[in-house]
Length: 537
Ligand SMILES: Cc1cc2nc3c(=O)[nH]c(=O)nc-3n(C[C@H](O)[C@H](O)[C@H](O)COP(=O)(O)OP(=O)(O)OC[C@H]3O[C@@H](n4cnc5c(N)ncnc54)[C@H](O)[C@@H]3O)c2cc1C
Image (tube, rainbow, N blue to C red; front, top):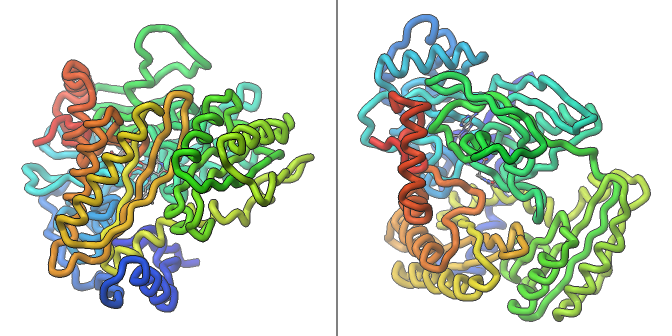
């Protein structure tokens, strides 16, 4: 059987890209929303015509045996999947392709590679699924040193599943589907579903502090990691797997969010759970945005802790085809592998309706041992959520400038932040003379504040540079986030794109302490230079 091929430029597999008829429909829909002339899809890049610079290194045999200079492999490992990434790949620009791609199979391979890199003076970029949207896996030009991108895809061993403690120790290279298949054989699940689930990996989630399925309580992978193993140029860094500990600054916290700058994560011990069998969900509609936010806050602060509590503004609802775009929607869900959930949903609904919402379809209950996963498979939101990355690539192919950015802020500061973000983004649209759309949702909610997630889409800038427009929106939005007490990222990570704002967000001494840690674990500075603002050249 032929292996499915991943696209060198778009999200996902080549055989899942939308057919021409679907692209035409999308083009018509986009033109009707954004105006302007009819949109015509760009042709996909011609792989055979793309010329890569020859590799500038030739490693010794013991390293060369797991490295490749194959052009397609180098193109596939050039960058992540943000707007600028997809745009540049679509235009056949692979000047930043790594010199080589390494496929190590063991920690000994990694150790040998790190010794060689320190000796030969090159940079190593740890690679999980390559779904970074913050420039986490691409060393920009000009490059003073050769680059080897290190694909962790062979680290897939499930070493231990402990149903008593509900833990699994798994290889960092497992993708979301592979991990869930392995756990499913034991009737267990991690229930960590970032939108990039199909291709992102355990190691990537840990390295970026990814945000997943749960809207409350277990929002980040951090909450699901009991222990972790990382190999660094200075030796192995393995934490004890504990349910909790008060023993000083936690070592696993150095690994969570390390973004490939401190070592290669090879294994993680994860807190797993039985698959849910009971589910109760409801969609609450709101005429006004303020009352929708107040209702969401009431649920977030109620102590009910829903697994889903996603607020979509009406434009976001329309974009995801879960509503006609007339009302704002609050998606509520509770799930469990035994305890009843209906009463919790009713309490949450009472809070949401007291704040002005209506629930015309009433609650849906999936109780009494049905497989909750199967029962909700047709859910429009979930389908749209997983399909969205394919849509994103297609919009770029049609010439739209489209991207997302996300944050977290206190409930008290949210209204001012939201107003500032809208003003900043629309100001950037106006300055470029383009018509654009900005949509909002809350991906996660906390007792003290929401995690707002924004999507912007503009028509192609007539005669303008799409990358410059993207940059202008990104800078305006990021400045607004920092100026209004929000974080530069709730879960997309820092990478290279957010590094300038990250350094303003954290205390100066924190950055200096991180640099000292980098100097200890990676003294020759060979690992992913530039992410987190560390070790850039
Ligand atoms: C369409 C789309 C949807 C997304 N949705 C979400 C979402 O819902 N939630 C979310 O949190 N993020 C999301 N992201 C961002 C991205 O998927 C996450 O950051 C994810 O955790 C990256 O995992 P990866 O395996 O693809 O890592 P990569 O992209 O390969 O790498 C990301 C960073 O981690 C480092 N790294 C990767 N593996 C290792 C390892 N084994 N050891 C050390 N360092 C390593 C890399 O060097 C890099 O700095 C989305 C991205 C896209 C394109």
